[in-house]
Image 1 (cartoon, rainbow, N blue to C red):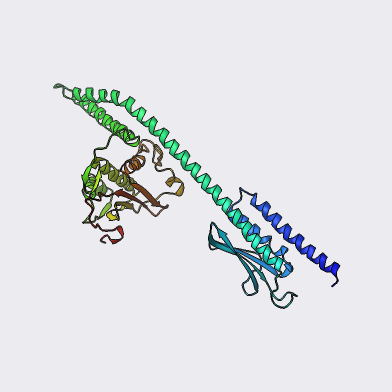
Image 2: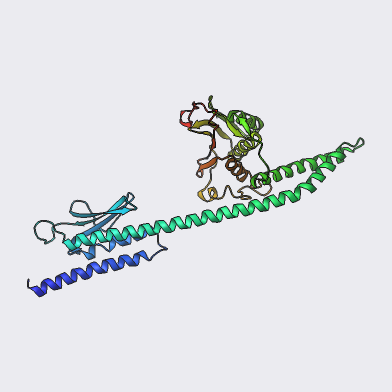
Length: 382
């Protein structure tokens, strides 16, 4: 082979390398495409850039997921380069020669091909980092929009609650006063009883609005969470029995004390339990678990009901969102639970899937001065 042929061959190889990198750069501009699609398109660009494309196959492995070209197998001559993302090795790119291409003795891959594979690995890392940064930015924007919406709804809820409180109190007061009339006809007495019951229900909704907007001050004192759980379940035992629901308690015998508003935490347990009961229309099991971990007291409420989809899970703490029929839910129960828990310095997590029930887990800060070595959730009695 004369010098002109060698130069033409080298020039051809260089053109293939630059074409590969150019097309890879174009892929990086496909911001709307899923990352899996970009990686599959990227691996298809590799074989044509190598000296013997008809013998070449490629594979990209990222986070355990493989993207391969047709005919790829691991028993050929392999060239590999790692994919590093933010200092962590997350995958690799592999080029394999299938069969025995007409190459010189020793390493069948050119030095330029090693350099190209390293360049492709770096370019892919930049694409992935840019994609993940964009996803993080969009997720943060969504969280900020969600927080802003909650704050706005909180202000609106507080305003509505205060405006309704006074006229509702007057209606309730006059209805209760009329009930005390000596010669009250029976039919009118029944109507007044309905007015009072409706007013009390409306007042509870207003209290929920005030709790959600944190306009109602908490009266905190030292308490044991088990006592709150027992009080709440005492209010629900009959309803659960009537609906064929078995309550199973896993209450730690040695819980650290917490500082909290007992009535508000009781409402948390009641709301979560009622939510579970409504999710088990044909009966089931309601499990209540308490325990401790480090400097936190833990509460879990679990059912084996209908469960929730991922779309519903994203909305359950948004005020007035409900999947229940009209007049069967206000959409305030879980937002109030979230508001009470966060106002107590705690956190709440939810695990659920359609047909697999739901599990709400709450962590509340323990009183360190009073804390003893409580049981962990994992060590709860069976």
